[in-house]
Image 1 (cartoon, rainbow, N blue to C red):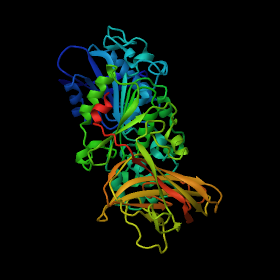
Image 2 (cartoon, rainbow, N blue to C red):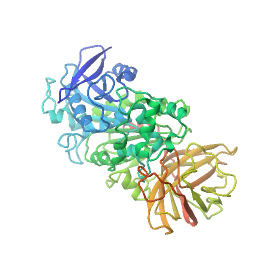
Image 3 (cartoon, rainbow, N blue to C red):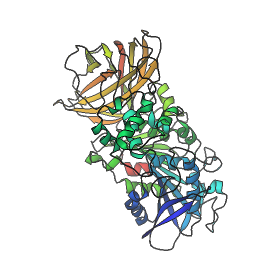
Image 4 (cartoon, rainbow, N blue to C red):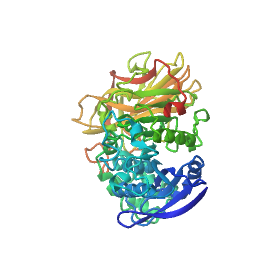
Length: 566
């Protein structure tokens, strides 16, 4: 096989640096295209892996990054047009058989998705009963001329299948939780590493915090970049614009019109897990979900459980072949790992109604993503006022003080309730092992004496020795008259865990989760622009509150690769 660098032209004349890796031989090949802001050279081993399995493999620096000229503006429309131009260029090459898979992780997944969803008249106009196999005849999509020359460019720029791993779906989806609060630490880290520059500096925020430990306490958040610039030695002019965007769910909504196949890959410890699930459940064509016990780096994370490791490269190749051949069932199903147990549970959806975004799902109170399916789990209700549920230890009344916030990077809890800063609850030991697979939610009856309050719920599993392991987290923002009791639903994300007998569940309810999330000022002002902070007195009513967990009632274990590829 050989790898060479070419420059792919775009409609405005900008030529994008692209590595092309081809296997030996002269026969026409299917292609996989990765468009990334993180440096195409980091994908060379991946390209060789695809080429070893008979694919032409391409990795491209997006506009304004690394080897590609132009200006870097994350999530602008140029990703759609540049992606379409690249797919059309691939199809015009002598080595191409016309079949293209768009693939990527994180921002690169966004690039793949906007390319796939760019042309409603192409891959998105078939009826719901269309046979996926009808998209290919004699090894090429219907809209590709057999001489390899592009036909209609509106159609030529749409790939035939998409692999979207840990997708970062947009400015709002990455900057804010579906329930409203701002993701401060992660966004500051990403912008310091990648924003307003041609290359990347992954350790930029860590160095800045070493120089200025209270950096993330800066107010207003909108001007944090000015303080960060002192450590970075460069400006971040795009930082304020990150927080101006409010709309979310556009790609998930567009996905409902798609007819091409999708493989959505995520981790239950990834901050974008719910967007991964929403994309899968809302996709109009054949869609598969693989949800492992991973964070944003998936199996590349050294902390990934050994027993839950999956050869993602081999799985991607196998799925791509099935998708291009039209062999995937026209359904939405997949597999979710039960933590580090080595077991995978089947995930299936059969219903057609589905929320347009994760925000819609939040509005439904964290409705299970199994909704309408042959549900394998039974919702288990853990009341706050029951000896068999969660017992209140202390903090039914507590003070949420943004000057002394509950920290996201510390699992330690206060030993007593004197001057409580959170509500703390604990379950009795589990009498038997418990499998959890699906959406969890805390429904709490609460009061705040301020017009705006964030409600953060953190669920931790304590093994018999007392070792703490994060299990689930959720945070929502509520506005309303001070002192008014309210029922608040806090979605806790999608769980995939096996809890051994003897495990205790510890629940914390707090007003902050800093520095992962910006502090709510409690004044009614926008937390991004506020410069004044005030404490908030909180009350949690145990009688009206409960934790709802998706307990597996009928075990349906599967092997992930065969389940994904059928």
